[in-house]
Length: 481
Image 1: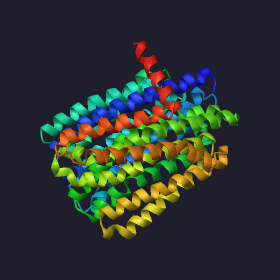
Image 2 (image 1 turned 120 degrees about the vertical axis):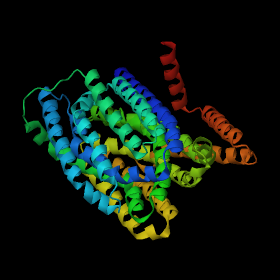
Image 3 (image 1 turned 90 degrees about the vertical axis):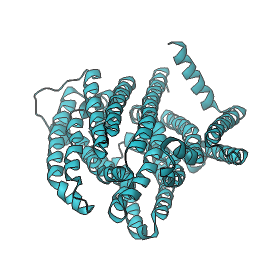
Image 4 (image 1 turned 90 degrees about the horizontal axis):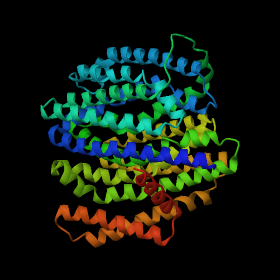
């Protein structure tokens, strides 16, 4: 990679990490506050309907962010076409969901959520104004500006949501937080983007991109269903409280793995797309991203699984201890999901949105069929099966990646296994060293400290280059402050 591209990639990952780090830190505080102020059943209610705005937003975005990123030099006409198309789709999706709210309530046997659905889905309208702006920032690797938008949005929305939760607004607080986040993020993306729409309704560029973007659209919808399949089924077949317990575990797992995943997504596709036609450099760049992802995700997620019980009890009280048991299982899949995301970005950067679509839809179908068959056997069985399927699909993603850039199984295992094994051994040693500590506060602190020191020592002794490069880059950034 050229020095310029290295710097762009490093800066993108730095600001992507900063963005996700701040968002997850604030989300941590906000999640603790909400779990103490909002009932389990209210979390369950929101978990039931979250899938609908997520799918609608995927429909509205329609894969055009990825399509624009794959264009070498997208023009104003391209962005403008996407902007107006998304406005039309966003408003259409809201109107459809507005009138479908009673059907959603009937599916969950809960007529009280009709008004909540119609209120929560306002976020679809707000986000429809930001797709072209987001695509412009993404294509031009404006990770710093994206980070500032995300950080400001999470701070403002969390404050408003926490105040409403304190005033006992229940699930209305959760819905308002989501709307405020989207609205603030949209306004700030307009502020940071230099691109502006014009009153030219030319949809030819959209038509030319649609063959590629449609597969991304379908993939994104299936992804949202995959991620929320348990919420969908639990909301129908189990109580609101049980759904809330699972959703709490899912949210904490998501906060942890998205810290790494968001950092990678910030730069992977545009950087890899720029290297198309330079196979050796592209493979080298991809392997470096893979090692960096493994370096972070395995200790972070396996470590979170190790401390999940004491973390849950200390932060959101023993009332949620059942969530900790599910969280320990979910952290296993959380450790590999960023790797799947990276390989997905590679596939998209090569223009193979069809492969991305079929791999994702096959996972979705496998999960839907499996969960529909095993839900009578309990939530734990469903969660274990969910994790098992995601682990299996890691190797399916690799199979297609290897066909595109000659990334064979030996290189793949060489890149991931040292980090996976190191993190696993470190967590096992840490568990046995601390298992006799009874005070939960001391236990939590001791496990975090010992695991971090042991993992750092292993990486140093093994002379892992990624560690030295990360330390060097972070040090250079902070010395400039």
